[in-house]
Length: 176
Image (cartoon, rainbow, N blue to C red; front, side):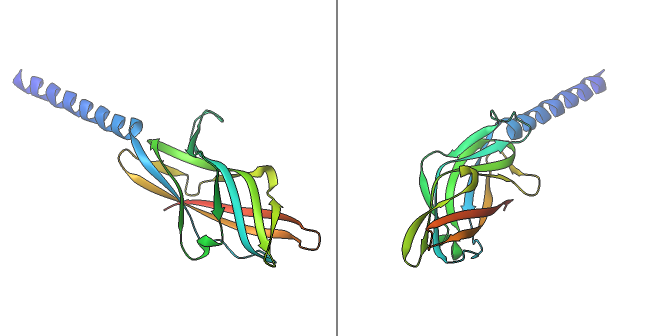
């Protein structure tokens, strides 16, 4: 009888421990840091590129389309792509519910470029960048900090003769 009671006690302890670990890693929160790094310099005549983002959001995998988006940065901020040529730039950080995140999107309010020392407004297709996160996404674990590296390789089209410019971004998001 004692062996049976001891065995049942061990099973109950293992089940409780497994449930506690599952809850810890599934329902806790971890920190996400977003950094931007060295874009290419396929900028044509442009010497500077600036993007004004209103929000940066990340999508939780296996969540409904709009209900799965969580705001990482919710205030308008200019990102200077030229500055990231030499130094990684932190553009946001947020505590998020533990889980797997598979997409990130930037809502673009405005884009400016500098050509020949003069600033021009540039168009960004759809005024939004939605990027699939490579390597199957980024996993946020309870109590841990993870980093997501964003690389925007922007190609500038247009000319200062017409003053019409367009930024065609190729963006990559990679867990670090």
